[in-house]
Image (cartoon, rainbow, N blue to C red; front, top):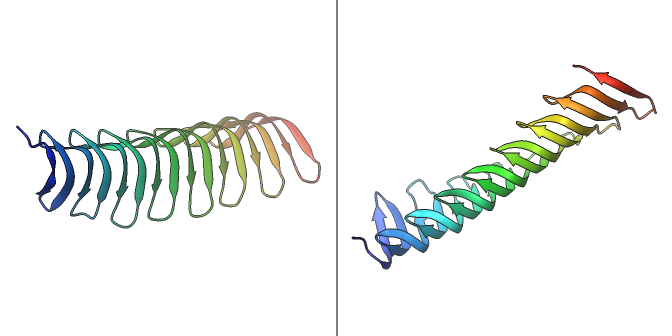
Amino acid sequence: MGVDGCGIEIVDGNTYEGHFKNGLAEGHGKKTWVTGECYIGEWRDGLRHGRGECTYQGGAKYTGQFADGTFHGQGRFKWCDSTYYEGSWVYGREEGLGTKVWPDSESYKGHWKEGLRNGQGKAVFANQDCYQGDFLDGQEHGQGLYTWVDGEVFGGEFVDGKPHGLGVKSWPDGERYSGDWFE
């Protein structure tokens, strides 16, 4: 039989302060680990569950929803290098609609599956080239429009990140090619 109510529990140097039910963290509480990780938020059956904020040694931070101890639902994770992802999470991975921005100004806004770009989205690369269209397993794949910073544009089919199949490419000088592309 566990303890119910509020209190402090210290186990192996890890400290939990908050509400308990049947001896497990339940409701609102704060846990600090010896590793430097700290979580403040909702708990259920001893696991992070509900809304909360977790900071990690080195400065990484997640703010959002948790389920069964991991990121699940809407949230924002900021890595130590300032990369951040804001959007939908499914059991610890980017999944659904979300936006990720890297320190070199590369960004992606669109659909994710198992932590990879998947489905419709828009990527702006570090050199400011832009691709809008279908993604599969993290790469441009399917129908899309790629615009180079110098004004070149390709619209058509992509396979494994490259133009492949039917498409139209135009250049800033007005030249244009329509047909099959194979790389």
